[in-house]
Structures are given as C-alpha cells and as structure tokens.
Length: 351
Image (cartoon, rainbow, N blue to C red; front, side, top):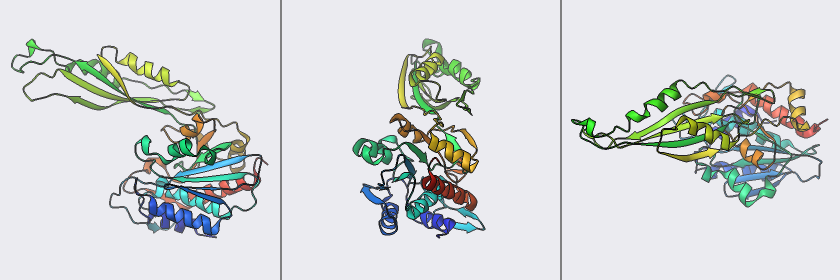
C-alpha cells in the first residue's frame, strides 16, 4: 500500500496555485486511468472517477486541487509524521486520502464518485465544482457528499452563509478649513462602526451543532483629498450567519444595522447549508468511526451540494486554522484516519 504521507508530499510538490492546476489534474487523471477500476472523465481541469455497479446508494467524495499562492513554502518537507508545505493542510493531505481510496476501490457496497476540481480558492465564477453542476450534473449526482476540507478528521457539518454588503453614506464637500459648510461622510460611519464593535453574534444550535455568527467591517472607502471634507463614504460589511437563517433574513439583519445609510448594495452572497446528518450513510460514517461532530463556521462547497438536494459534510485531514499560513502542515494519523473511514464506508455501506 502507498504510504499516504509520501503521497501527500508528492502532491505538495506538484505546483497547483489557482488557475494553474493542469499538472496536478494530469497526475490524478493518469493515476486513476492506470490504476483504478473506475470510469474516468476529464472536464477542463476537473477529474471525475465513478463506479457504475448499480448500488442502492452513491457516495460523492470531492476535493479541490488548487492552493493559494506560495509563501516560501512551495516544497514538501517531512519531519517525523508531519508534512509541511504549500497546501499540505488545505487540502493535499485530504486529497491523498481520497485518491488512495479511489485507487483501491474494487467491489464496494456503495457506488462512489470522486471529484477533483480546480479554482476553489478564488472567485466563485471560476469554481470547478460550480461549472460541473452547470455543465455535467450527471457526473456530480449522489445521495451524500463528503468534501475534503481540513477538519482534523472530524465531521464539520453544513456551513455558514457569508454575506458581503456595501453601505454608502453621503455628505457634502467643503474645504477642511471651513468644515461647517459641508457634511463629513466619514463621520457618519460612527454609529455603524460602534454597532459593529458591540455586535454580539448569535450562537444557535442546529441539529446538535452550535454555530457562531459574526459581523465585521472589512473595508472603508472615502476621501478625495487631504484638504476636502469627504462627501461619500462606503463601508463593506461581512456577515457570517448560521443555517437557521434564510438568505433574505440575513440581508434584512444587516440592513437594520445600516438604517442611516443612503444606499445598500449586495456585493456577494453565498447561502449556508444545514448539517443534514440524518442520512444513514453519514450516520454510519460517524458512529462506526466514533467521529467528533461540530459545526462548520466558514463557508465551503458543501453549500453547492446542499443547494442541489445532496446532504453534505466536511471531512478531511489537517487543522483548518493552519490553512493558508506559511507554516501549514498535516499529520500522518489524520490522513490515515480519513482514508480508512472512507474505504470502510464504501466497502460496507450502511451496514
């Protein structure tokens, strides 16, 4: 059997920054065509491998191939049972577990679909999974999906929604030597900034998972010159909200905070996904492997599956708090645990 930490290191050493995933997609396609018993498809830089055995259930296992830009960490380095390097945590450790499961799949109790796709770390318009749902939904369908985002080999259920809104506050220009002749738009932000500073996010429990909401100012744009009272100020607010709120409720919640503004514009909005842990495949995965279950506090592509009626959870190797850092790493035992759990679920199904 392939050493999973060595396989993950091999993946780290294949550069795959977003929009540059051709080489790693070639690697996955070659390994899957040559060594697996699965039907393999290549759509752009997405590689899909499926079993077609007519089983009662189909499990979708998905992971993104891309990484953020390198930060003097582009080469793999193994120290003991720990792998360092760009994407080791997010998510080449998880990819190694998934690829190894695909290569060994022979006569499963559950049909499996493995999806390896590009451009998750950049704007949604480029997302490879999004394009597959639009162009080849037949290759993405399944009963349950597991996304290999780093979770330290726990189940992180569903995900929060993320809403970014721009609020425009208007004033009137004047010379800063005579500010009483104008109205300072930046000063008008004081009330919303104070409200954001004091904001205490909800902690709702959904299907036994506690989510923690947060709202932050992430950008302020204002001013035309150092001697001019600014006549416009725009504050961008990011709201992370739990899946018990609808997208419309989330937008209304932020709007209530910005009642004094002159214009609200939705800059970006990705809805949440509910935990959806009741499917027997997910229940079997959790109970037989005694996995910890917790809420996913960020947004991930599980929401894409959920929006198409496919229950999905995050399940991968690596500590998410290390993702995108220069010193990110992944532990051998987490890769091995994820791999064994995936193989066991595919081989035994709901039991």
